[in-house]
Image 1 (tube, one colour):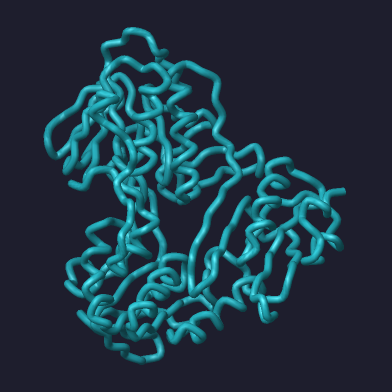
Image 2 (cartoon, helix red, strand yellow):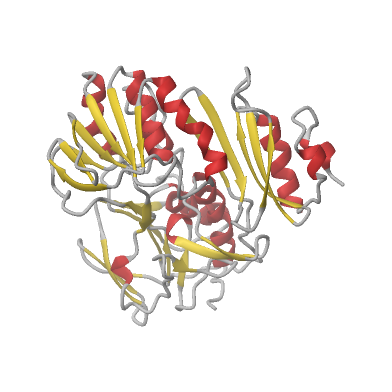
Length: 408
């Protein structure tokens, strides 16, 4: 594995590929940690580094939002190259090729993020879009401003958040999902089943078990022959690491396209590090390699990769954390669960408070918590997952018992 460079007077440059949260925060962490060599931050978008969570909420609704990241690049002497796309990496020569010319480096940090998946044949269709960038949100915003109709392909996190915003704007919304229930790729049916009712309550139509076979301009064709028309189509079927440009570079990639980093966020390729949505890492906490496309991971990972570059001991193994606001509810998820974990429920999704929690156990240890409008459960659950605490399932299932009181 690569070694740290140290904070001393080294003339070599650190190039960070990707000017999102992970990349910008890495540049800042390097300067705050004492790195005195040149730092270059490369971003494919022309916007200054910005935060993505408001894109599916405030930006779509035309509401004020603090998007630009609070990093003073001039004060930290960080070279910001915007509108520049990385095209190839020469590990042996330590050279990054871009569409604006080559950049030599002593170390390169891959913070290139992820790309939204699209449907075959939809590239270039003017009324079909994904939602990953500021420009994506700006293209979709006029449809909501006009109260137009929207078909959303995918009832995942993005699909639910956009449906929420669109219904708030008074749009007619239809959500089609190939799986049997919302969040089919993330949650088991017994947990996600109550969420299906949220769409109808909000006035949106949800069609599950409805694979899309074709998209034609403003029409979506389903496997059963149904054709849905709309002013715009949003494709929200997930994302993948933006790493295709690394093919043949010698940087190790996983089957999921992620850069294979170690616990220090270094790779087997000399001088190459990775952080954020493009990087997977071995989690000793959960006993498996994780690829987490979460804001929190992009925020905490830079501290590890900066420390590694500076030659300081560091390990990246956080408790994954994610949140979403949809249909008037606040969802928070912490930890990591697998199909082998035991599910324990707290609260009644159909009760008057509409607040409930799902917990997962591996043996007696709490591994994950999904809290719906129960922030105290999330806060206490996060601490217990971090500790790998053993809990009493009977006490855990009682919504009147604080999670911390269920510890054995």
